[in-house]
Structures are given as structure tokens and as C-alpha cells.
Image (cartoon, rainbow, N blue to C red):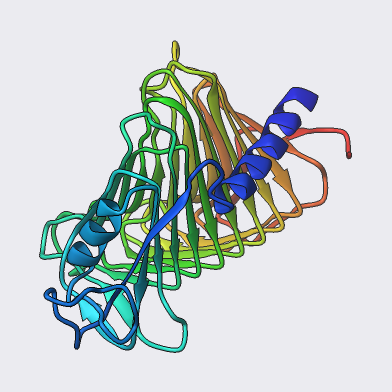
Length: 323
């Protein structure tokens, strides 16, 4: 069990490194505002672009790390594709949102294995609450850091994390996600993937609020740390972890987190390579509290509150020695 915990701690460290944008030289900084113009220089808040897409293109033209700053209030109806190190920076003093056309993804991130870092901060990402589409679709990146974001109303996924190359880390912090599909962590191929979700609410989900799935993964495994977060009100599971025979392993630690009001259950561990660790978790008012099937393993540090579920423990919950 020490190996599992060490890997999770490494995931947190990798996420923190990603925030610093290591290895990316600062270059293009551009601005976008709803009262801007794509004929502007876009290099100052006084001369912003009209669209995020144009601001991004001008930042990319400068080379190195791209920083696009949103100025003032506004909803940008467009989709973005990020392929090199980029920050999309909002301002919490204003209502600022990205809203793609129906059925489209708002932001696609794909560095094709070049190991770039990406940061999205203080931005709302809004779907249409019907049909398909993703808020953020991560195909490949060294690290993606989402801070102070709200992602709502997408039919396919609010966040889809499906890297396939080298090392990939997803960090979600101080955010609110849901009102549609939830977060899907589904790496593929030979990749070493990690995710840290902290101080985040994921709720009101059409299906499971957090899906972690290594069925198509052959690499070094998926390590997920969920801490100080809230999951509630879903038609599926609050947290659903799945592996299959022949896939790689997955470790999910749920710490100081609540999982409530789900139609299927609070936490599910399915498959022979799935390990879910519960540490100071509150799991209550679900159809089932915790469930393990198909050889999935649920482990408890003995400090959880699991109560007032239709069935509190559906399967087995094994003790693990306190740290």
C-alpha cells in the first residue's frame, strides 16, 4: 500500500509543478473583451481583441508561452483549441464565460505529446444543457490546471481527460462542475496519468459525477487524489472507478470528501485492478453507500462516516492500517 500512497503524493507534486509552467518561455500576452476589435493590436487592456480565438492566434504568433487575459464582462460564443503552452486568465471581479455553439466542445487541449502545460483560471464554461459537447476535452498535455472555474450544462462531459502519450496530470481546484455530465478521467494507451481534485464541488450530474476508467489504458496506471471536495445529486454514482482484466491499475484516494444523494451509490470500485481508499470520507443518503464488484477493492482507514444509505456497504470494505 505504500507504493500506492507514494504515487498519489507524486501526482500532487506534478500538479503543483504544472502551475509554474516550467520549461515554457514567457512570450505572447494578449487581451480580449466584448467591446474589442480583431483589428486591434490586442497587446494591452486598452486595445483588446474581440474574440478569444484571435487573441490566442496573436499570442501564438509570438512563440513560447501564450497568455490570453479576458477584460471586463462578457460571454464569448466560440470554441478554442490549445496546442502549445497556454494560460486563459479571467478576472473574478467580472462575469466572464466561454460558451460554444450547441454540440461543440468549448476548449480542446492537445499538444500531441510535446509535454506542454496549460492553465485556465477564473472562467465560466457554459453548455446548452442539451445534446452533446464537452466543456474541456484534454487529448494530450503534460499538465492541465483548472483553478476557480465553473463548468455547467454539457451533455457529453464537463471535463474529459483522455491523454494517450508520455505523462499527463489534471488538477482541478476551487471549482464547481455539473448541471449536466460530470468529470471523466479515461486515459488511453501507454501513458502515466494522474489527477488531483481539491476543494471542488461536482453535482447535479446526468450520470456519474466522477468517472475514472482505465479499461483502454496500458501504461503505468492512473492515480487519483480527491480531497476536501463535495459530490452530490447524481443519476449514477458520485464516484465510479472501473478497470477490466488486462488493463493497467488504478488507485483512487477519497479524503475529507462527501458523497451524497446518488441514485446508484456513493462510491463504486469495479474491476480487478481498481483500488479505492477512503480516508475521512462522508458517504450518506445514497441508494448504496460503497460498492465493490468484479474484483474491485475498497479500503478504509477506519475514520469514515457511512450511514443512512439504502445499503451502507454493498460488498466488502477492507481495513487498512492508519498512517
